[in-house]
Picture (cartoon, rainbow, N blue to C red):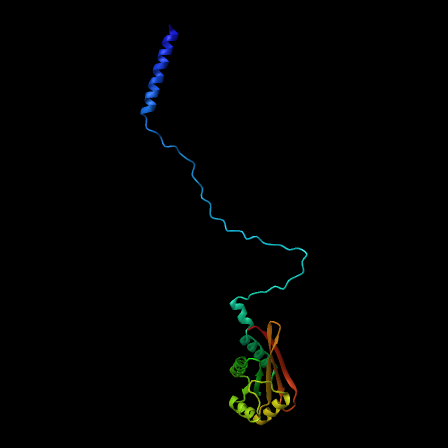
Length: 198
């Protein structure tokens, strides 16, 4: 008797529970938050060779670094050397800077003339006077002039020092080479050699 009452009571509770569950609103199911990861950069594979012959490395210079190796920089370094080496207030005849490239040669002569004048250390023979004598003697204005001819031009212009130069190419570099000669003693007073890259 007690067992039947118990079963009836249990059935009643179950029916009440079912009724309560079916009428109750559904609760949202919480999900774990999704973690977003930052995109990873692509990794470029690097090939490593061991035991091979060393290969030449080509280095591309940044624009600001390449300026240090320009013709302008080589001319400035050469001018600094001349200022330190040659006697102050000397009268200089800058005769020519020979090059295979006519524009490069003309630029080098004009720029070096400017730098020497701007230093306010030397007196420079007027370019027109030099060109007139060189035309008269049929020298090329941008060609290489030998020491004897340079000294002769120096005597005619009254210069104390004559200066000639050449731009040589060696492998991937160029070299600006200048020489200054005392007109009276014919002694070489200064030699410069500065590398540069086009």
